Every structure is written in structure tokens, then in C-alpha cells.
Length: 195
Image 1: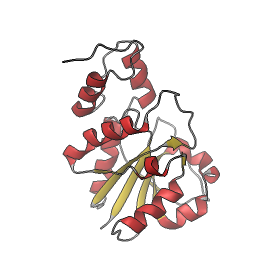
Image 2: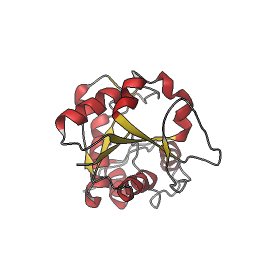
Image 3: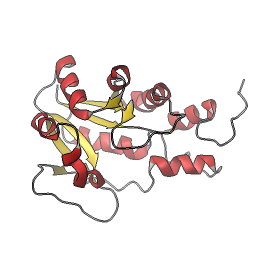
Image 4: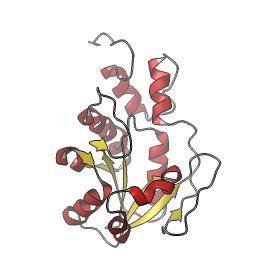
């Protein structure tokens, strides 16, 4: 089965992530797997971060649309390296051809610093998602540029909006908005439990 993966913190998963999955579906990928990182290799992690909560939220967000979620990086523990994840997916799933893998184009300049990046490139078709107005290019790394709409808000901005009490519910899937509200996520003060 033609398979693509979307990796990341998904803290929280938002409509821009789902749009990228839809772009991959339009390119002929039959299976899209979201893979929440245990500990991202290129980001600092909040000490209160709970990968299992991010996994459950991602599952709630994507399952209504027929996408899958894998907890392989969380089960593996430690720092999440995409090369290990891609090799795992190739072993565990019936994958046809190379795995599609999407990164934001802002990650392209540092891609050569990723763990075993050449081995990773040997096993994937790399897709660049638009982020912002500036187009970034590299001649030494093969990639395919997606023509996705540029989602105007990041997960970081959504967390800030929630923490400051600003509206956010139309930036995330409805399932994520409910999950955040029920679990009182990203607020400075813990919410009282809803009965």
C-alpha cells in the first residue's frame, strides 16, 4: 500500500496537519500515518509534556478522516529519530514503493544534521510543506515541493492562545478542541474537572 507519514510533536495537532494529509492523499497515498514523537530531536520539550496525551489527542483528531496513528516512537522511548521510524514502518506495514515523508520547508536548511539523513533519503520521497512567504531551496537534497496552503498559525501559537484565554477552536479539528477542553490542556491554571 502506498504509504506516507507525518511526524512531529502534534502539540496540538491542528488543521494545517490535516491539510497536509489531504495533500498526500491527493498525490495517491493510500495510507497516511501520523507519528507523534516521544522526544523530538530538534526541539526543546516542556517538562510537563506527556507523549501519551499527545498520541491520544492525535488519534482523536485523525481517525474520523481515515488516517492512522502509530505510537512506535513513544514505545521506542528516548529521542525520536525519523530514520529509525521509517525503517520500522517499512518492516511492520505492507508498504508499496518509497514512503512519503513531509517536513516544513523551514527544516530543510538543517536536514543534513538529521540522524543518518542519507539513509533516511534512501528510503523516502521527501515533501516540503510551505511555511511562510519565503521559499527555501537546496540543490544537494532531493525533494518535492507541495502546493499546500500556508496555515497561518503554529502549534506553539495555539498553545499561547489557549494559555491566554484567546479563541482557538477553529484552528484545530473539533475533536481536538473537545479533547483540550475536557483535559484542561495548555492552560496556566488547571481547570476544574467536568462531570
